[in-house]
Length: 512
Image (tube, rainbow, N blue to C red; front, side):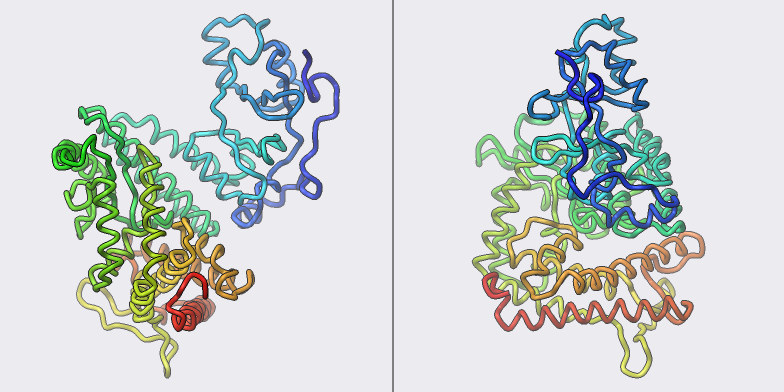
């Protein structure tokens, strides 16, 4: 059998109609466009593929002829990818193993593939590649290969920095090395921020690199413990759960487990807690401070069986007291980070079902969300709090800036039964259901991202000059930034007004 594309001289398949190659603009402009571009726009050439029975020698000749870094092995009839052969495979499975070059490439290809559809955004591709340590990513429409993108295509001018940081994390052998990696993440984020990278992509990449670091901490720590044989899942909470971590962030996490029998729940918790506390301490030593509110897996209150988590959520929904609403803001934004992800999916399904049966809970959440008003003044542009010796006069951009957007997005997602935890994704998905068009949603998100950018700048200043990590004196800004901040707060107020209008229907999912 011969190759199914240019290996045999046939014309390779083109990307889908209307989604052909693009000419790369200047690097800086390209970076700013990345987060808005579909992955299909990153496909710079038709994929070069081969059949699984082609010899390794012929594959290498084709790689050299086409000047590519990998070869996708596909079913010759359906174009379904079966594997990928990369230069790393050449080194590890061919050269070092003294593999016979006459044997089929199927014997040495990597069969564990990571692929995304062409309509996902480029920043999602960048996040996926960073998380999985990939240099190439397949673009698949259904089961059919339409292209291959590389780190160079999706990471722009910072591709080397992101790749190096990710590699450093994966190779870290101890906490000291991970602490260095945590510093590398902060420095990379600061450099990206100064260069004007889009906030949505920036926070996703920072969160992903932080995920990689947390996973490495868990892997290193787990090797020191003998854990019971049962399904467990380490979950990220709060901003980490929303993929919205900033430069200055502590840790919020928990554990879900399923004991072999209900009566053994306490025993299993006791077996998990030393491991969980060791992970929390290692994260702290790596540069992610312990949560001041003790919302961590090492706290017995947040190392719970699946049944206990469901009970917690049900109690908060049934009795929406102030403490319950505060917990909802943190714990309802969970996502799986390590272990059996199906436990988080089952918990999410139970949460969605419980909320659907309790419109009163959503009403209480809405009232609580609307109590946090953006700090726009009636006489002056902004209302400032006086501050104290530890917090300078200004605005808390986390409490009064980001929170109105985050709270509204959470409520809308819960009301619609959406499973997303990211604020931008929640608002985009819920927009059609709250009579807001795509343009209005994007205007709201521009306000949210601008405030997030101001928070990051404030955190950078706090590291070098002291002061509150999320605090800002708007009157210290230049005229343009001050006007943009005012407009961002207006977008938050508009979103709250829409939420208030929806609450007259008790935010019933059928009436939003």
